Length: 107
View (cartoon, rainbow, N blue to C red):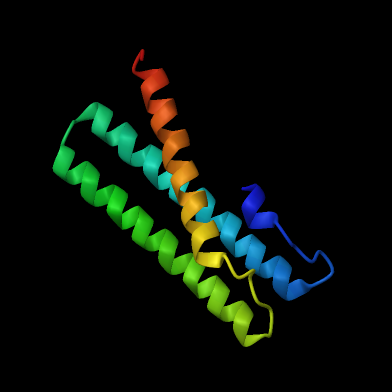
């Protein structure tokens, strides 16, 4: 989450809206992944799990792309590494959820 807040301009309502959208998308991704893993623990189905995780990532990507585009229309540019930063955040969420699943599975 630190990368999401890097370079934030707390005096800019547009920049704040962009960061809010990012944080909301990140929370949504984490919630969707946890819900998927919870459902899979109850009734394992690797194909369904894979699809749900892919859908969650697609929704996350769409939300972050929309936030960046909306801010750009208002002359606020997310730093040049936007795509890489957003991808890193998604990877970190994946790792966190994976670690929680492993821990709760007794691993």
